[in-house]
Length: 277
Image 1 (cartoon, rainbow, N blue to C red):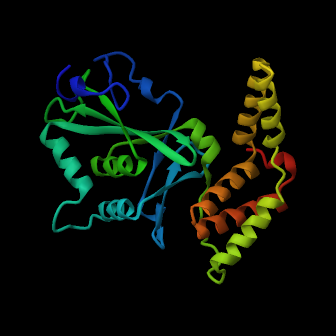
Image 2: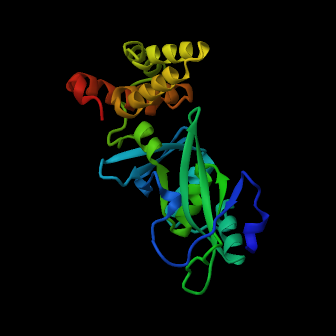
């Protein structure tokens, strides 16, 4: 393989062999769903920016991805096609790739660790004037989601997110902003009261799992982990609690208030069996 493929490190960049014919199914996308970002899904407030990636699986859910203010401004300018006197960082990255005959063919949001998302950018050499990727030239590199999304939008490339993340971190689209008459301190107090009222079903499972590991009952520990994962993927209230805690710790007070209001609506209006999605 030539080009980027022979200069990739083992963990930061990976190269793939692709067949020139046969099934069109992309093996890299097993366990992934497509997402979409548009201008009304990028919100900036007091230096905190959120990109809402709409998950295209028919459930009308979005994945909120928190990015830096500079990256969100660059994304908004590209979405709105605002002309710049000089190229921004992501414009330079696009120009470099085009000069060496590569393009971004897709991006994937692959994992979330301690409230931080991880992404991969897939690049491929352009075979001819049609813009089709050259077979066997695809590589993927580790990236922040903010950079991956910016490049995907500039190249018009599809974006995907792990189904596991879509199940555990997605939420309803925030149609209404929180009440403007709430101060940050009032939001913090109210959200903390809401969190304190919630009985987390994973706490006991976690304690039982830790005890099983200590006693080397690894099969029991595995079962407890499966129960924890089941709650995280099916308990809508628990997902909202996790999102509220993250928003509060990051100082995203309007986001925390919106999640609090959604939690209250769901808790008040739905019987317990309907709170699991």
